[in-house]
Length: 452
Image (cartoon, rainbow, N blue to C red):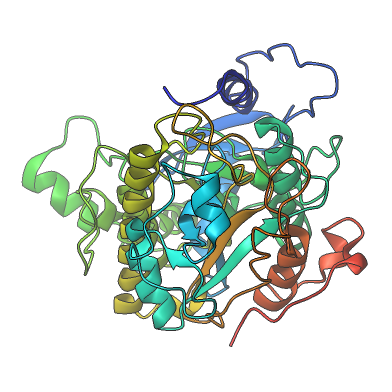
C-alpha cells in the first residue's frame, strides 16, 4: 500500500473493522456513509460432514443443522454472478489507453502508453488494451468480454469510501445499509442456504450485505478437515467411505441416524475434491503469492461440485490507488488479474459450466486524466468495467467520450454509462428478477442488452 493515499488506508481499516463482528467500529467522519452490513451479527459454524468453516452473517437463531440441510438440498442450476473488485480506483486511461489522441500524450508525458503498445480495441481503434490485459483482449476477440470504457455516475464522489459505498449499495445514498446483491438475495433467496451469497474473503463484503437471509464468507476453499477421534489411516478411509450406507430401519432413531449419515456422505462427496487444493482443475492457473488465482480455482470447483451459489464476491490482486510509481504497480496487478480471469473462464468452459457464470469487474472510480508530479495519477471519475462470460454480447457498452470534450472541469473522464443501469440489466436479464424491487429509482435507468 506504499502508493495509496491516507483516505484509502483509513477506509480499508474502517471497513475491515465493521465487517468483522465484535471488533468495534472506529470513528466515522461527518458525512461518511456507514458501510453496508454494519450491525450484522456473525456466527461461525462447521459443516458436520466436512468441517468447512464459514463465517455466516445474518443467521439469526436458525439452527446450524438447517443450514447444512439447506446447502445439501438446494438446487444448484441457477445463474451465478461473480463480482471482482479492483480496489483503489483503477486507471481507466491505462486499461484502455487513447493512444491516438494527441491530448493523451500531453496530459501524461511519462505515463502514456506508446502508440504501438497493446492491441487495438476492435470497437474503437483509437483505444489500445493495456499489454497486461492481453488475456481479456483475447476473450473479447472471442466475443466473451463486454467493455464499459467510461462507467460511473454523474457528480462523482472522489472519496474511496463513499464512491465504493455507492457502487456496493446500488444507489448514491449514504444511508443505505444493505448491498445491492444482498437485497436481491433477500427477495430471491432462502433462510437455510448461506452459500447463496459467498464472499471469498475473511470478512463480509458489503455488496452482499442482506437484511433477511444469511450469507457467508470463506477465506480458503480447502480450509477444512474430516476426522474422527482415535481413528486414522485405512480404518478411517473405510469408515468415511461407509457414510450414507446406514440402514434406515423402522424406528425414529435409526431413520434419524440414516438421514444424518446420508447428508454427511453427500456433503463429503461434494467437498472432498477441495481437500488437496487441486480440485481436479482441468487448466493451469497462475502461480502467485496472492490468493486470487487459488480462490478462482476453488470457486470453479465449488460450482462444479453442485453447491448452490448465486452471487460471489472477490477482490482482485494489486493496489490501484496509484498516486505514485503507477506504471509498474498497475501493470503487475492487471497482469495477475487478467491471467487469473482467463484461466477461470477456460476452467468453466472445460467443465461445461461457462453458460452459468458471469463475471463483473469494477472499481470505485477511475483516475484523473493528467498525471501528477509523482509518476502517478490522482482520484478521478468514470472508470473501466468488464463483463466476462460465454453468454455476454461481447461488445462495448457506452462509449469512450474522448479527451477533448470528455473531461469534466476537474480534468476527470465523464461517465457515458451509469453503473445502476448495468445493475438493472444484470438483475433482469441474468437473474430474471425485477430491478425495481432492488435498485432505488430503477425506472430512471436504461436497460441495455447484455446477453446474446
